[in-house]
Length: 81
Image 1 (cartoon, one colour):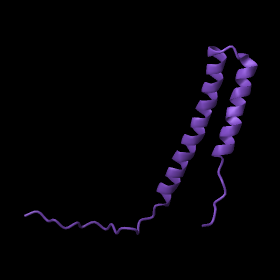
Image 2: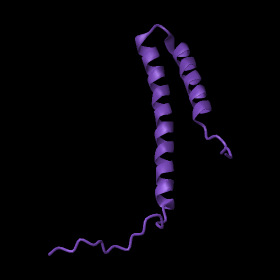
Image 3: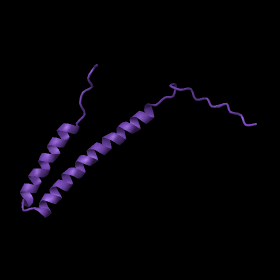
Image 4: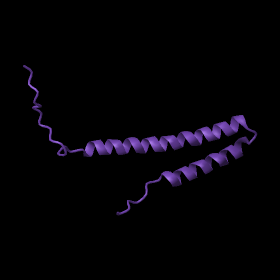
């Protein structure tokens, strides 16, 4: 008959998860900054090629998107609850 008991050494809540936390923080950080990079690039290219905005207008719009995105995505200080 098969043994139904689990013989692992795992105890819930006692595992060191610092590496997983750092990996998750790295993944989310890269995701948000690369998303901003893509948004700025696409804004510039779409305005440059699909409208009559021109090079300077496209560049200004891309810089505005970059500035607003940086302001919204920068790391905020932790707030105590």
